[in-house]
Length: 260
Image (cartoon, rainbow, N blue to C red; front, side):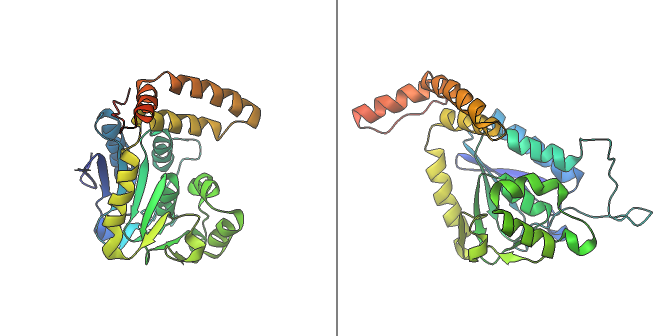
């Protein structure tokens, strides 16, 4: 963990906060490293059933990359021969996380910040928060987050955001493919708690293995995906959580999940 990333328990969830309010919670290597460590912490704790990702303050969830011009005037230094850029490391770690990731979008999510939103599983947002990819305004393109924009957005919406650099409100109709729930700022935490409660009451084993399977199935041809899905379904059926779930259904009682 770093001073730029803080964690706290929120019931059965771990809330991870980018704590750089003075920089609009912009991403840099320290932040990415802190977020990766926080995800490791969450997965190591068997009592944690979900992860919340948010930013400090109310202005920004994350304003994207913290651009610091290099000596030659370029906005950042990037070794094109090194595939381990900190943003790529962070997004890969989010992909690999077997806990549900919920974005609490407390303010603007721009560029890489929107990429973090799209890399989460669920999103609750302040309806006034602005979303967009502004890279084209400074001669760039949102390269690192394109895989995640493609997963979440219809193609034409993604292209409009990328080509114009213009922003949309989280509460607007255009943002519906990105945001599960957009509410007034005063209702943000109540809506978040409501959503988290619906998630953490379900089988942790089913969710963990389901997310693991989804990450692989997404990249497979349909025939291979169906074969893998059949294997994973048989694996799930042998878990203690699955047996408990069926027993609870038959006995008409709430299940007691052990995560096994």
